[in-house]
Amino acid sequence: MSFIADTDLVGDIRPAVNFSDRPSGEKIDMLVLHYTGMKSGKAALDWLTCEESRVSCHYLVFEDGLTVQMVPESVKAWHAGISSWRGRDNCNTFSVGIEIVNPGHEFGYRGFPDAQIKAVNALAADIVKRNAIPARNVVAHSDIAPDRKQDPGELFPWKDLHESGVGHFVEPERISSGRFFQKGDEGPPISALQVLLATYGYGLRETGRYDSDTETVVTAFQRHFRPERVDGIADQSSIATLHKLLMNLPDQDTT
Ligand SMILES: [Zn+2]
Image (cartoon, rainbow, N blue to C red; front, side, top):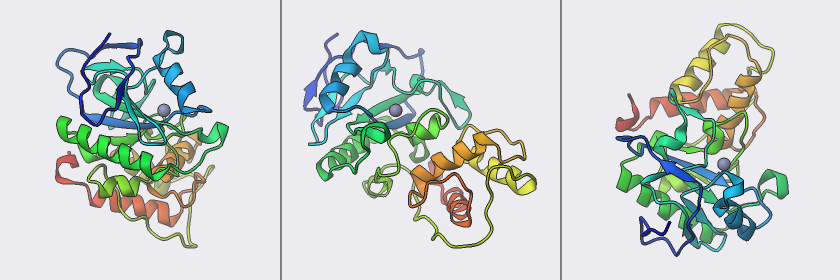
């Protein structure tokens, strides 16, 4: 399938073969950021455009900032897999996905070069504006699939993205000593934490037990919103940062 790029920020078009129709009437309402998690950008491009992979993405951004479009936004790319956010499953049906070239935690996770981040921020701003995507629906793959995914990871500069007008972010609360909750803890404070995380968007059930699902979601939360320490322990800084996010939701995100 050949197609015309959705934005003039695209430097090259390399059509993928894995995609499908969006359900009729489904509006794009989410932007998902990924890292490729492969040894090179070339390997990622080959993988994302081959049938055998059973995956694809709308955009791929290389370390030098080159942006390649592989799937038109009007159709569904296969990037998110089993996923959930704000009570909705199958995020592929209503999202656009950007893959950012980085070897990832498996092959030598490293900081994202400035040229790449500049390109990602510009592309994300363009997508969010054209599709009127709410700030709280600009997410990491790890936010919507915390039990399976770590990408784009704690080195992704969400604060810079927010400063380019994309996504929801507050300055994380300072890490200090004090009360914290961790795996094995039980009781009303754990229920409260689970409810807050689910209220923000995470697919987490209230059980009143700090189980492995809770630990996994706290880890995902930290990767995105309190990246200084990613350990799955709900310390005061993590909890206060979560409260602050909920208290500072942009108007269009409060429902
Ligand atoms: Zn991903």
